[in-house]
Image 1 (cartoon, one colour):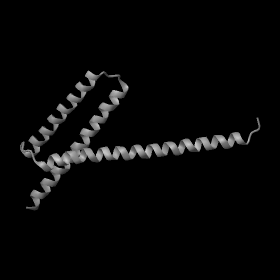
Image 2 (cartoon, rainbow, N blue to C red):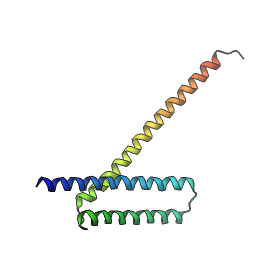
Image 3 (cartoon, rainbow, N blue to C red):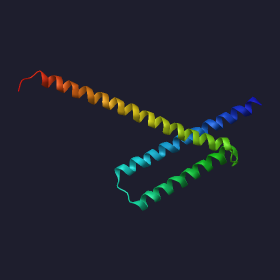
Image 4 (tube, rainbow, N blue to C red):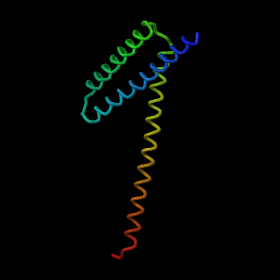
Length: 120
């Protein structure tokens, strides 16, 4: 019995990691979009290709690891992995912004004190 539970937990963990991977894959797509100008049709085509790729990858995971049976907890694990990755990205963005503002504030303060000591 415990062996079966261990297999289920491993399957859940792999599905969770797939969710993280799919989110990072979409981040690469977003970076590509920032580097290359796109029209509305190209954006729609890229999104369609992304979701088709996601479907194929998830189907393949379910087929190889679970004999093709769709299990609710596997889909939930993929979604949880995606959500965790998105929340981590938001958190890191806030930290980066605070760090940037802190460094920027230090530089401005440093410049103003240097300029304040000089006479024009």
